[in-house]
Image (cartoon, rainbow, N blue to C red):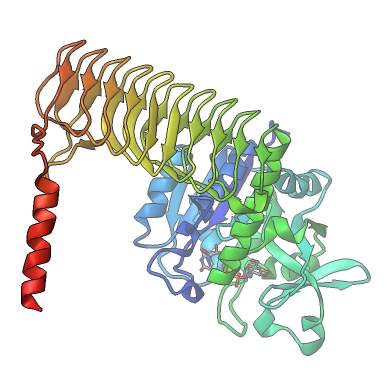
Length: 451
Ligand code: UD1
Ligand code: MG
């Protein structure tokens, strides 16, 4: 298969007016990755290496995404949004030269898998000139309907152009289409805009090809694979399908999810085997949880690595750059940001540790805060291994504490501390004998005098 020259054109221009958003439609995320990113990832996994993305004017965010994900892909700008065929032709420079297969995919159809892309490719390899990927829609409203005659696909009719009878059809167009290389450009160039929307419809390629005696066939996929997104409600539906798939995948790799439907993953979440994830946990992008760890209920992790055998939560927040080396304990109401927590270190209660390095086996007491920000810049705190930081310590960065130090509870530490030192940075305690009952007597008398 890989010897054939294949070009995939991803159509992604336009805001998608029904999304009612300033953000281009294909940049709305699912599992933390923009819709178009899911399509690019599928093409990469399907080993389609020539990719052209059709973007709109002012869509630099999309161009950046393409540059990051597929640096070899070209972006072509469709200056006016005149329909899907017009969009495909914006990538005309990519259509020059010898091509065996041309695939057209939509940036708003993010759940497509490499297997489904290959279904279309196989149809072309088996002699189809045009292969349309269709699906049985539970609710076909808004989709193009596949019109067949004697079992042959002869046209795709868009919702607005369909007759009452055609609207009853439930076999719909997913938007993914394949063309034999030698016909692709001619077919696209023949498409006109004589329809209800006055747009150049890619779907018209089917009727043109069928009339000119080319071999047009429909292959099918499940609705879940090809659901298109035109509205926020469909975005939410696709998010739900994505999450259901990801939960299944995670369970199959030997992870325990106590209540799978309450755990939310990102597109790139990596959970190793024998991890236990309790209820109501959210993973933002960039999280790796290594084997034997437990993520307890109501925790939120993003851009974090949880080393082997660690415990996180309940109610913990790991922000970008949190790196737990292994066997760490991060407890309730603890926030960790851009910090490496050494092997076996513990931050068990009510702390903020940011821009820091915490040595192995160090214990951070309840309520400890690293003061990393002075309103202008961020500063680092380094704490050596085997240290004990008493409760409610305030560590004012930049600050460095050597290994094995002991910080007394309630201390405010502002200066460097050498290894094995004891630091006490707090007001001295004053005890006045019998003063409590004297005070009470005074207050009572004052109250009685007032009546
Ligand atoms: C399209 C199909 C419809 C199919 C449905 C599947 C056409 C004419 N209709 O309808 O048969 O059932 O998808 O989800 O093809 N785009 C551009 N430039 C344009 C127009 C669209 O780049 O000028 C891109 C959009 O960003 C989007 C994709 O093409 O990613 C599809 O466009 P959209 O407007 O969503 O078409 P649908 O009405 O969903
Ligand atoms: Mg659409």
